[in-house]
Length: 363
Ligand code: HEC
Ligand code: HEC
Ligand code: HEC
Ligand code: HEC
Ligand code: HEC
Ligand code: HEC
Image (cartoon, rainbow, N blue to C red; front, side, top):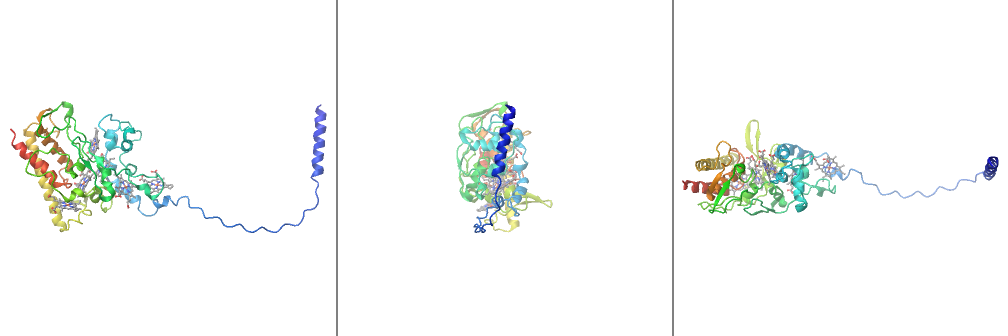
């Protein structure tokens, strides 16, 4: 059987050899016509270089941002993992993304690799790789969360200030702020941080957010700063990476001297630089002295703890609680004694002066 198979394959080979035996090759045919050139392809990186190029489009913003409180604040780590209080919405990039999903989002998480607010929090980076990528993540109007009501919807500068208002607004009061002139507020030992939180700027800008006790100064005075977008002052033409632009800072120090970036101010404030500096200093001094005066009253009435700056647990009539609230709103307008309280000075001053006058009537 084996030798039969061998014999068959040998004869098959012989057939192939016979077929492979050919005659001499004929002459070569004529060359064909050249083909038409195809369309040039686009460089793989052409889209990228709309932003990533030799100009400072990205790098200048990175340097400015690196110098901002957004980059340097440490609260992303501290607030991560909180199960109440919405901390991560404002203090972390991931929390803000969850918040933007609406009811489907879960702000209260312990995020892995948690980040502070950064480029991706405010811009739609690398979504479609077109220049429209840099569109802001939201510009929708913001309904305030503090329980007093009101809305921030500033359409100046493409509504870009609406983005800021999501985070730079007062937090809800817990327990709720009493209605003007009615009832009491009781604070337990775990509620000594009662107040609007550190950032009530957007509320102030819209003449809302305070406790409007009756008084001589109006709460609805119109003021030119009120209609400006946050970005027109905070993101004005930058001074290097120290102020303006993506540092979003206004007060800075250079060669040992303190300055306020004036790029966003001088379109309106055409007075001399020194006259403008005096105006800033006087305005700051006026608010600081009102804050001192109100603090003295609040200490006298037993609600303000002078060593911690927090509330003292107890039960207070509405106007005293409201005056304490107003004090905290005004402090958040400037943040520290060097702050300028520049957002809506007539409103801030009305909150303080009317509260001082009311407290002085109380025993
Ligand atoms: C519309 C502008 C824009 C375009 C177009 C663009 N980028 Fe970016 N890119 C950015 C911004 C903004 C950042 C964030 C910078 C930062 O994090 O500091 C970034 C960051 C990056 C980074 C750093 C790593 C990271 O993800 O943070 C890389 C790598 C990158 N881009 C690659 C590309 C490539 C490749 C393309 C083209 C396919 C491209 N980019 C197109 C704006 C752009
Ligand atoms: C996702 C929330 C969020 C958004 C959006 C946001 N901020 Fe902030 N911003 C913060 C937080 C949180 C801080 C404080 C960081 C810290 O101290 O840990 C801050 C700090 C600041 C500061 C510095 C405050 C200080 O004490 O020095 C300025 C100024 C500021 N933001 C302006 C803006 C402007 C202008 C916009 C809009 C273009 C904006 N922010 C948008 C969350 C936000
Ligand atoms: C509505 C947005 C928002 C929410 C919610 C929020 N914060 Fe803040 N918080 C801010 C902003 C904005 C600042 C910075 C204000 C400024 O400097 O003018 C700030 C400042 C702070 C600071 C002072 C930081 C510093 O650098 O001095 C602490 C501490 C803080 N927040 C803790 C918390 C905690 C804890 C929670 C949750 C219980 C929380 N925050 C919820 C927006 C928010
Ligand atoms: C807190 C929010 C916020 C953060 C963080 C942020 N941006 Fe912006 N950015 C803005 C706003 C607001 C504008 C102005 C948009 C407008 O007014 O139309 C802007 C504008 C820009 C522009 C266009 C400016 C121009 O020349 O027209 C670029 C580029 C840019 N940002 C890049 C970045 C990069 C890179 C980062 C991170 C290093 C970053 N941004 C972080 C809010 C932010
Ligand atoms: C849209 C125009 C406009 C811009 C921009 C503007 N201001 Fe004003 N500001 C006014 C007007 C109008 C008044 C009220 C008249 C006055 O005191 O000059 C005022 C008042 C003030 C006051 C005095 C408040 C008081 O009641 O004592 C200060 C301080 C001030 N501005 C600071 C600034 C700073 C700082 C900037 C820039 C970061 C700025 N302004 C940007 C229009 C503007
Ligand atoms: C008229 C110009 C102007 C406008 C408009 C404006 N700001 Fe300010 N803002 C200032 C000035 C001036 C300061 C004081 C800077 C300082 O003292 O460091 C300030 C301070 C702040 C601070 C606190 C900085 C600190 O020292 O703690 C925050 C946060 C802030 N602004 C956010 C905003 C937001 C959010 C908006 C829009 C809702 C806004 N600002 C609109 C001028 C402005």
